[in-house]
Amino acid sequence: MLLFDLTSQTWSKWLAMPEGVISFPAWSRDSKYMYFDDLSQYQRIAVGQHRPEFVASTAGLRELNGRWGTWSSISPDGAPMFVRDISTHEIYALDVQLP
Image (cartoon, rainbow, N blue to C red; front, side):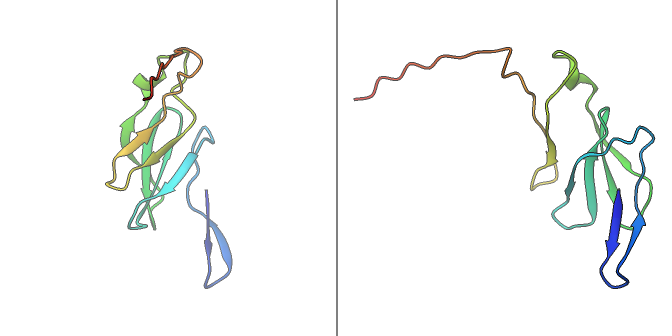
């Protein structure tokens, strides 16, 4: 992940993950952290730092066919959010009787 400095007009390396996976980066509300997942855990990194912090494990979310979804983010109150994609595994029917 790279950062662009608007004042100096230069790019700098901010974060490099060993597996090269930085998925769905999202800024915190106060712009002090960037949240992301690396396919095994949800992490955040503070602006000005180069080491991410653990936020939550995603290991238990992968039990359905080895995947837990296709999206992650941070809620307005700072809680991590994940999609669990079960759209091809559970089918629902809804019968509606309107007046």
